[in-house]
Length: 603
Ligand SMILES: Cc1cc2nc3c(=O)[nH]c(=O)nc-3n(C[C@H](O)[C@H](O)[C@H](O)COP(=O)(O)O)c2cc1C
Ligand code: SF4
Image (cartoon, rainbow, N blue to C red; front, side):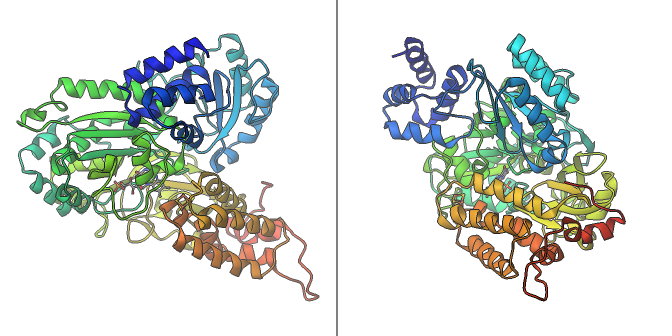
């Protein structure tokens, strides 16, 4: 038995009070120091925490940032989402591969550096990007990749790669990252001037019930995607029986193309923490948890400092804001690379130190959430809105935006446009207004709401972004006429196949079948009947899956079949003699070419 491993595990378990709900933190620490959670480590952890070996093993095998097999001390994770691909990720991958002398998915023979792919790391506005351990590298190209490998072979220190530093707080001593916020448009609600404590002080001058009433009056709806009314959620949690209640902030931000929470976490985390504290007061909770995705680990030290400053200022801790008897504090729970953990019940499991398996609802988290207690889970942006509503009032909040969707929305814009980045716009903005704002030309398709949302074509660009029309958690991906919409849909299906937790058959198997049939169509080998097959299969996956991942996973195919029907039909069309048409990508992209008045480029 390795002595140092044993001592390390004893120590880290002791530091976490041998609390099995902190298994995730323990596992992350072991992975970080030993490059894997080996069989020996699993036994040791299980022994220290008095758990079954299989419980530890099931966690270690679930998260992509944890592994049972040894990895290099340095792991280069290349983002392989569609936007990175369009911006040249393949060339970057080749450069890394060539210089390291290994393929993606391998570790150098000296065991020092591993190279792998990872889904969206929240940097689509500065793609291609990668993580080198916890260090984010943006705007990659071949030369940069070669230089990175040479530097790592020399000094072996990923933190020395963060040059030049990014804008705003990215240059803060506790972040020191090359990430840029790229906040292109500031609105009145999130990115405007704010005096810390103003919203909290006003909230504490009211009763918790009045606070919830204020949030209900504002008609605030959750910004994480589903748009559930926040006031109602809080009311359920307040009314639920339970001695301990919890407030969880969902900063998992895993939907490809979404990176707006990253900017809040970097530039105005106080606004978010204050909203969580108001939430704690409203529902009667003493504990808050910020669930921070593993990809944003570079922000952790900074966020811990913001929390500690808030404690010093009396905004957290005992008798918060001078309110006798209101005690509330917040801890940060790191994730470890799993898209499904953005789903609130999976996220709760992950906070409990378990695999991020979704749970069957009801009971909803408001009744039975974290540690089986009433819990509210809200998005980062939602909590910021709460703080502003308390400070400026519900009427002010409702005056902004459209009638059915008050206030502003943060949009993360990426893809084929001149100014990718974050835009705080009033709800009700038309897609074509947004396209103009971001410098998009020759746009043939816009993916609204990430892969789980919908892809729309030019005839829908007059539609509006709001809960009653095109709803989005924030992801807006723009594709010009040189792009192949079916290829994009296929990449999104790859993502869902990869990220399904595998619990239910429709999602686990159905999505793989959709992908297979779609590939066949793309290869020009499809039949006209394949379209009915895809429609029926997609609809059954949506209705028979247990959680939101499966319920939205066929959307890439269903929405492109609806909005880009011609592309599919041309590919599956039969000639008069009954033989398949030869596949011709030019014909397949005729619609897009007509819109653009210019020929398509090769993908
Ligand atoms: C697969 C999946 C991933 C999700 N990812 C996120 C996420 O990254 N951030 C988020 O706030 N909500 C995410 N959600 C929605 C959450 O389940 C939940 O509805 C949300 O956090 C509630 O906050 P809100 O009411 O403030 O929107 C996801 C849902 C699903 C099904
Ligand atoms: S729908 Fe998919 S991700 Fe959700 S529980 Fe079922 S298999 Fe898991």
